[in-house]
Image 1 (cartoon, rainbow, N blue to C red):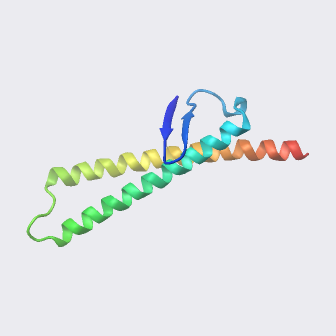
Image 2: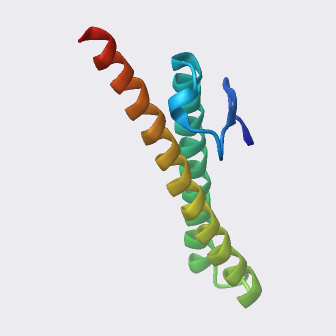
Image 3: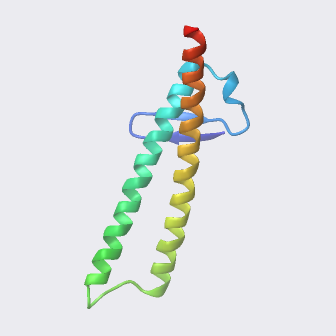
Length: 105
């Protein structure tokens, strides 16, 4: 399992455990933690954009080739992590909604 710690949420995300067997409260916590992670990633991507824009406008000191490559790899990693967080959030939300509908039927 992966533990995600965000501003107000700490949640262990199951990797191999089926969401079907998790309590509804844990599903909701997982969804919130994954959403918080996605927001944190978005702020990181925005900060990288600011760095790149500032470097492009600075004629005296820009970014060297290694720094640009590192930022590219970082963006790639953040994109993959963001996709994974969105997938987890969606799965948790789907299971939680299904239970609500099933309970109401």
